[in-house]
Image (cartoon, rainbow, N blue to C red; front, side, top):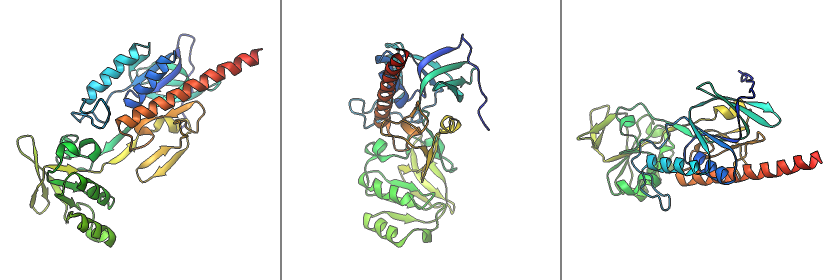
Amino acid sequence: MAAEVVTVTEESQKYEAVVVGGGAAGLSAALVLGRARRRTLVVDAGGPRNAPAAHMQGYLSRDGMAPAEFLAEGRREIARYGVELVRDRAADVSAAGGGEFDVVLAGGRTVRARRLIVATGLADELPPVPGVAERWGRDVLHCPYCHGWEVRDGAFGVLATSPAAVHQALLVTQWSKDVRLFLHTVAEEELPDEDLRRLAAAGVDVVPGEVAGLVVEDDRLTGVRLADGTVHERSAVFVPPRFVPRTGLLERLGAELRETPFGSYPVLDGTGRTSVPGVWCAGNAASPTEQVVNAASAGHRAAAALNGELVFADIEAALDRG
C-alpha cells in the first residue's frame, strides 16, 4: 500500500537532517551533523539490539563498556551541539517535493527533513527453544568477536537451525577446543561430506537430535537437553539467529534492496547513500555484520556525505538565483 501523503503545515518543524534510530550509527551521524552546524533531529524508539548484553567489546577505548552507558554518553555528546532527540517511532515517511521528506512519528507529530539517515537496525529472531531467549546476550550468544573472550575455554554448544551453522561451529573453535554442534532441526545427511570432514578436523563433535531446551542452574547455563532426555554439559551456547532488518521506511520510499542469505538490505554506495536521492542508511539496517564500532563509523561517513551534499546544493541554488 502506498504511503499516505501528509501535508506539513507552517507550524511543523523543519530540519536539515532527520536521523531515524538512536543507536551507535544514528548517534554517530548526529554528532557529525551537529558539529557541522546542521539542524538535526534524532528519532529514537529505544530497544537497541545489544540491550541484553552486559558489555560491548572490540571498540577501542570503550572495550567492556555497558551498551546503555555508551548510548547515554552519545546522547549527552550530541546535545552539546544542539541536536534534538525525541523518544518516538518513525511510523511513516514520504517524499515531500523539492527533494525533501515528511516523517510521521507514532506520537502524531510530523517533521520535514531536507535529508534522511535511516539507522533503524535489525531484530534477531531466535529459534523457539526454551531458555534461548531468556539467556540471550548472557551465555546464549551469537558473535564470538563480541563475547568469545569472556567465555573462552568453556564447553561450547552451537545450535543448528540450518546447515550454515557449520561455519559458526568452526569459527568458535578459536575460543574453545570443546565444541559440540547440536543439529536440532538439521538432518545429518543435509551436511555435505566436506563440512563433516572439516568439523572432524577441527575437533567439533556433531550431536544429532532435536534440542528440547537449555538447562539452567543458579542463574547459570549448565547444559543442553535433547528431546530424548539426554543432557550435554555446556557453559555457553552459540545460536545463529534469523536477521530481520528494519527496512520498512526505505521500502516505503522505493529504495532498491538486494537479497542476501541474511535478508534484504539496501543497495548503497561507499558513503551509505541509498538509491533514493537524499537518503542514507547506516548500521545494522544496512548490514547484519556491523558491530558497534563499524556502525559508528558508517554513521560518521553517511553524515559527512550528507553535509557535503547540502553545502554544494546550497551553493548551486545561490548561483541559480544570480
